[in-house]
Picture 1 (cartoon, one colour):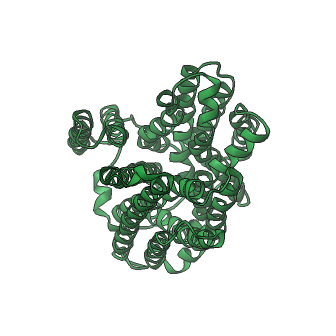
Picture 2: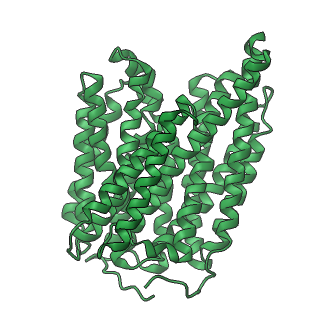
Picture 3: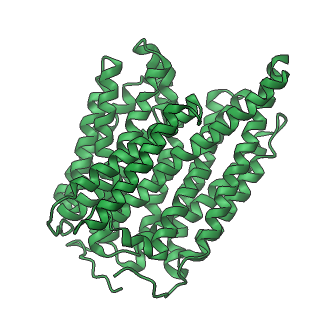
Length: 479
């Protein structure tokens, strides 16, 4: 497929676009995780319950996930730079209201509005960069975006802890305001030539069904974690998601200009890229969520030391992802994606060998190994997906990449959390956990090891799937 992509008016502008999109992507993904560390502070500040305060996080992740495909399509229809600038402004306005919130309800609603802007950013950013760079530099450019995504997701708790300790929770949101305004101004005044739109109307029926299906799926996954996977509510939500998803497929097949052209999944690289992308985040995200509990409960680390240990993961991703992107421009994504997920699986298996006597070095090199695998995988995989579609569908492709990432994170955390809880209940049933704190730590460690084994299996399955990609210079492309 020969794609002719309109370049920015100035050749040097592509690097400005990459820098601005990377910063915007970092901001939007950082805010998905930065609030987690402030949950106790926010719960106390608003005098609310833990069950209510969890919506400070869930409102953001849920709304952003549900709207990704819709905004990806809108970017294709209306122009991606225009949508990205609108997303930055919406995200900035939402951040301001978050920082000014005087009640839990106000913060939850503001987080939802902030997520609308984040969804615009996540779905249009990679498409904007892909459009600005020539195909032979696609992997390199998307490597920086991959670094921003990974760094934002994994560094959020560390940044949140620093802000909470030295400033106040308000500044987790206020810091976005000047950065967001500067990004929007630069994109609006310094970048041109990337607002080509092809017109048309949004498939509102398909967009609505997809949003409802994703909302039901997310609600089912969250409910399953807390109420059990066999509860009537959980089963009902998951069945509703399945029914709505089936209705979405039927509608999209009959629509002239659908939100998601289902024939895209007939292309091997697109389908494999979406599924293996899900596998990468489903396997890796539980590490960022549950390893801190091991560090605190089992090894007795204080929060600052936990943050220091966890920082090695984002640092590895930030350094390696652009290099992997550059290499994928030369040799293609097939070998790198297979190797990346294979290394990630090895890193996850190595984490299973940690115990109560492990040193900081023991933990760090294992985290680096797991992060190295993800870093090698992310950029080539994104390049593979973005390179498998026509220019007119770059926004949809970017939306699929972001959707796979978000669903992978949610599914991975839900699965790992359920495994850990199940193992801990087993210890309770045998009476062992009642013998003292040491047995409670033993129960958690056993559950964590079981979860990491499953995560390693997911990563390995993704690696095997990635080995089936089209070879370099292959002819299996969407037209």
